[in-house]
Amino acid sequence: MKHVKSLPLMTAAGLLAACAVGPNYHRPSAPVPQAFKEADGWKPAEPRAPASASPWWSVYEDPVLDELERQIDVSNQTLKASEAAWREARALVSEARAAYLPTLGLSASGTRSSARASAVTSGGSTVTQSPTGHPSNSFEALATAAWDVDLWGKIRRTVESQEANTQASEAELAAARLSAQAALATDYVDLRVADETRQLLDETVAAFQRSLTITQNQYKVGIVAKADVITAETQLGGAKSQQLAIGVTRATLEHAIAVLVGKAPADFSIAPAPLGAAVPVAPIGVPSTLLERNPTVAAAERNMAAANAQIGVAIAAYFPDLTLTGTTGFAGKAVEGLFQAPNAVWSFGGNATATLFDFGLRSAQVHQARAAYDAAVANYRQAVLSAFQQVEDQLATLRILEAQYAVQDQTVKSANEAVRLTLNEYKAGTVAYTTVVTAQATALADAQALLQIRQNRLNASVALVQALGGGWDAATLGKPEGAAAELAQTPGHTP
Image (cartoon, rainbow, N blue to C red):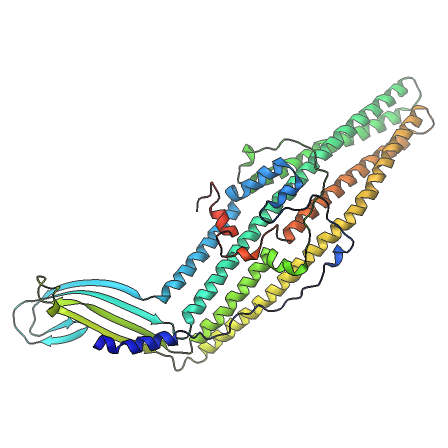
């Protein structure tokens, strides 16, 4: 009957546990434009980016880049550290959820004592026995339970905060993954530009060598002065110096790629190859989708939700805590027959505690939680603005560089034609060799500038894909198909 009488108390406690103090989370507004300003009159080059389920880098149609990007998930150590941080955050959620349920325990004890007067504890009660002068035994086997009733939602707000932290960690992992992929793509583009530059300098050295030969032959027959030969030798030496210097740039980029894919630079190499001509970029879509597609923005939004839940945790400290405890088991003077009905003992009770005066401690904690939330809101809005800036920057870069490339390409053609004409005129003796040198130097500089523009266009396309999230979607946060779960299941990955 006593157990039955305790049911209303437990029911009331459960009903009270349905409330949770503190503000419920609603995503604050952020400045979102109707359209991207720099997208006006701009059309993405073909082929377009694949669906979000496909690797974004496949639009560059480079099998070497494809193979390197696939190694990021398996071998990149920075990414593994981010994945471990996500698993740590997920474990904290399980830790917080454990507080929903009672803590159960078992205890067993046995004592033998002799005293003029002895105190024996049985079933949670202490009884003073009369002096006997003879040793006495006491044995207990008890099961205990304690439940911290979540009357004011402190535990629920803690779980809510930890879940948001886990989702933020997952978004940060996606951002780290995308950053590593973009860094690899950028380094790969720069390496291929170094290969193209080396090819250009090889051709330039060969052309300057032919010019030197012509000058030497003309000097031998007395047509030109020794100064022309020296000038041609100086020009050839400068080109050879650039030819050697590009090797430093290429080696450094190759080493950087090796580290990104988790390999020692000494055991890694990439064969020279030409740079792809196409500059494909992802469709930009509607600006509002950027809030879901950009993992950095998603991480800032989830951090904001976690900070909001902490306000409820701080407010809950104003209200009393209720802990229900219970004990059941057996107690007796002999082990034999201990687990029989006459030896059964039990107890049930509750403990309520509340702080009356703390001299402003809880108030300060609430103010701190609200200030942390306000800071998270500001960080979120700043992340949104930065994301829009990145997209607008790359759209403007791509649009302007496309026009600049067309002009520079024509300039290179004109410069090469000028070299051909002045060299013929020099052979005919109608112009000085300085004219040839000037034309050749101009042609080389223009060709290098054209390569630089190609490099900048490809890097801008990579940066735009990164700003757009690379096909990532915040809807996958906390789901089996999320970026973190996908990485944890990657072959070769060891959690």
